[in-house]
Length: 206
Image 1 (cartoon, rainbow, N blue to C red):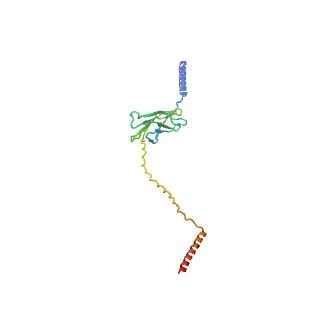
Image 2: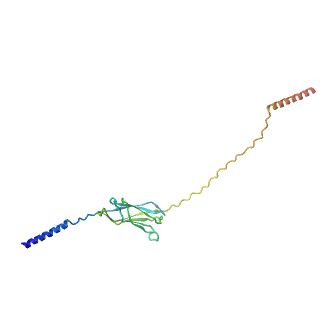
Image 3: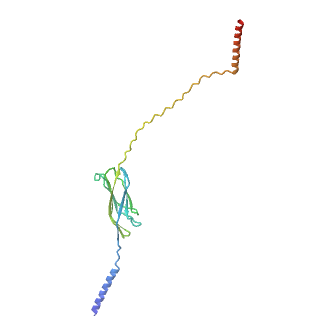
């Protein structure tokens, strides 16, 4: 009986130890998988200007956190030719709203062919490793407008402005000297007397 009791006692100890191991095993946090998407917005570009791209990740990261596993690349219609791309930037950080703005200072040119921008997100654990934002790859095309050559406006020949008419200075007519009124009366009287004398002499001679 003693040996049987010891066997039962040993089995009971094993069961208790195994139960304690199960009870006190640290619980693993469950990870939630979050599907991601991305909006890509390209500013209007004229050849010779830099390319500015805005990336919007959906959904936004948890409050106080950012995405830090983004890469963005540009492909020109002449990629493969030396100096014409492709170009990329890596380890891009978004803001707390999931937005990142990236500028490429590259030799842009106008072309009817498509330019291409791609965004790659490598996936990221956030919220104390309780959320995993899935990786993704997105692309879109855009155009670079050719620079407008300023059209030379026709040369307008100005009409000759009318020459100002010279003001003619009129030479004043010589003024007739004015005689005093008394002198005129005296002359009139003397003329009249002379005529009377002449008439009288003619009359007396007859």
